[in-house]
Image (cartoon, rainbow, N blue to C red; front, side, top):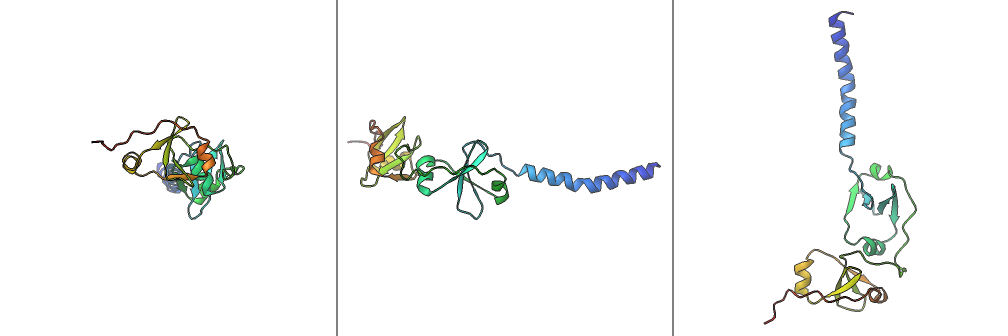
Length: 166
């Protein structure tokens, strides 16, 4: 084989293999790392999953999503990426469960009360006024729970108000 033939063979090989190499880089480069406990959903669908033990588990309803993951952002992925994660058993609904405890830092209120609490250290702490709520938790959503679920969380000391007293 002459140098010209070897050069031609090398050029043909590079031309044929280069697109495959770039395609492999593009597909692995754009795939996000999905961490344990992440909330995911496929584009153009409503179902939300939590990733646990390398599997995706369907969260059955909005109530369960808000009760267990109120402060967690949902990552929207292409349908192929979501489908690539093995499907596990669905998460049990929290709608009728007395075992559900809101996440640390969650803002909660009962169905028949106007008081808003923040959950800290396993206790609920009353937020004394709207000014304090807006100053400390301006973008947070308040989760409304049945009275018995709010009452089941031990009551801690109130959060100090940001309003200056005269």
